[in-house]
Image 1 (tube, one colour):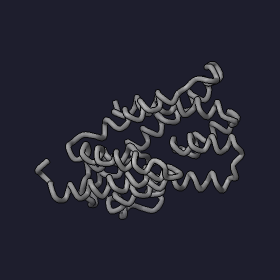
Image 2: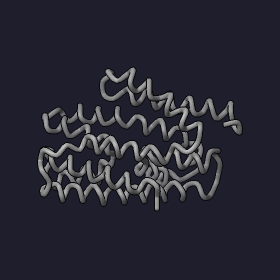
Image 3: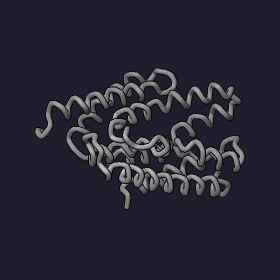
Image 4: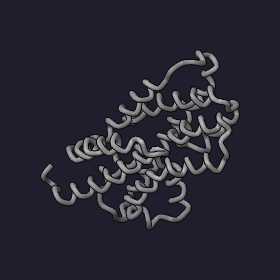
Length: 217
């Protein structure tokens, strides 16, 4: 089984319940799950939607939160630049946070590897199926749960579970530890920009460590 299956399934259920308990209708929540497909953006936008925030502000918030995906994509663009535009668009649409670490572990060097794209798409499609199944289930079962149920602690545990499978060597562990003070120290920045800073640092630090300690860690 995909090591991300259980955490993604639980995170999807939590997100589905949160959407169902917001001001969205069931149809709107289902539409958000299918077409937005970005857990952090879906959760963050719910409060904005409930407060009748202008659509441009919701869209701007979503863009800022998803800038990390642009960073991730930039790190692997050399692997897929030879692929047709349509295929790259599909791969980008199915991309998510947890895809990049296992992909780069298996294919660390760019090149015209015939197995790279199928491997990436295999993980991406399986995670998409896990997410949609669990998110839709959360939306549909929410009406049978207490409206004031607190899922924040469960969400934290799930995110920790999602991180664990990608911390597979000393480099990823070191980078994860080094990113913690950046996340905490910049926590007062708006729009969760502290996460973006931590990701930028982690990518740069990881590349630096790999280049200078290859074969030593």
